[in-house]
Length: 560
RNA sequence: GCGCCUGUAGCUCAGUGGAUAGAGCACCGGCCUCCGGAGCCGGGUGCGGAGGUUCGAUUCCUCUCAGGCGUACCA
Image 1 (tube, helix red, strand yellow):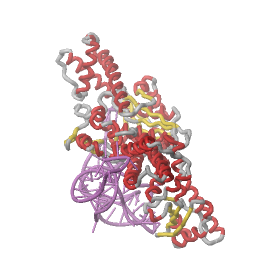
Image 2 (cartoon, helix red, strand yellow):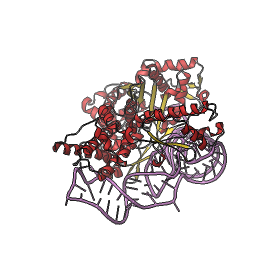
Image 3 (cartoon, rainbow, N blue to C red):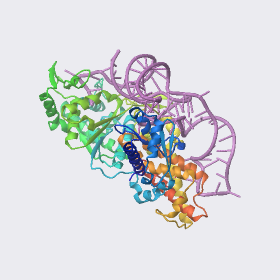
Image 4 (cartoon, helix red, strand yellow):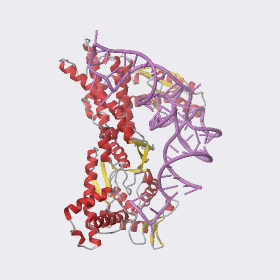
């Protein structure tokens, strides 16, 4: 149920009919109807909807745009849409259409009928997978993971609302080179804590969290790991450390409001032979060759600048090889749409991965990658490096602790993933009371308060379908009804363009309209019809704000 | 050097090829005996630059300047 789309669709077919009628009467000569749009004009004075068809046809129909527009208007069957009021030719050849506001009066009842489902589209039967965060389980979750988490989880919510069956997935990098380094780091710390004088690996994970992990292992295992050989010691340390790290990651993400349908282990891809198999498949298709002892993927055939190694000279597959196998596995699991949320430092990987999928016979258009620009973290104006190696990082736990889950999620979701984000912890804390999220939440709490007042006063009002609704004729009320009517379209566009930040913007817009309205008009009052109408309006706003916040993963409090 | 992303108001950011480019923060001045003042109202000649495509460009293309990231047998 998408009110705006319904109207647009009706107007569109009305204009197409007019054009065909005009052609039949030879009032206008043209070959085909162009791909015109019915849009909501930015300027209110330009009507409720506007159409640009005449301007697009000017050249082929060899008439001035305004003339064509007038011909279209003259041939409109105005009975086709009962809400249609006036139609005017304006500007360079726009057709501006004005509707009687009664088309909006069914909106509150619709919202109340659908409640938390308002804004959602019917199930479309398509399965989409969103993979996000997928942080290395060798360290803490950092700001980039926080942003990726907020964006990925919100996008998954948006897609669910837009009608998809959504699955969230976390890819566990529990194999490969960085695990080797992790193992060496763990062992070095273990031996150091056992009193041995060993040097820490030069490129090892030097963070305090690794030390803490080893300490907790020692608390359980004591010196027992000194008895076994280095290889087994490393294996056991890694197994225990990964278990602990993953438990931490899972717990932290859950406290950030994120839970996954599947945690997918890279290690299993190697153990099952899927990585080797996919390399073989590519080899048979002529994409693999050997050079300097390594196996290379001829990605230059796919538009890359240089070929990529998939099996190193030491026989170990690269991350790229495992990732190809992983993405093949995603498609084999039958997803119609596969979405990855990656940090911008992986951008070079996007074309290669799409190319690899194409080489394997999959449609690369079914794979989308959201490249999220990196977060630069500041504390009081001082940049903080986010290197896990040096350990000087603010973790997601600390972010939630200091800034709060709602404010943190909202401020990450609010911004376009393409924006380079400078995040200052001190500033975020300092401004926390003026953070936009509270503005939206406050609107919700205020409306709840109105209903508490109404309840305490024993106010009786017809909820949903009521003739009283038609007394909502103030300009502000019409604007709010329109905004509410646009919500399903907003969700649809956010899903289609993979732009979860639109929902946050929308919630801010609606909250602003509400606050302004609240300061100018009283809801609870003597006039029973007006009170009923406005209570219906309030209920609709309350539901839509709650739904928008729920998509963003932020609470909608009744009190603040 | 090459590739990707980004340059919009003092700052942080919106803006699916449309008509007069918008919010928040900050700054100044107003507004509650009234449903929650975490609010409202008022105050603003800004799309990095130059070409091009188009009836129309902040949006698309080319060049250019500036910043971020990448350009490993790391992930």
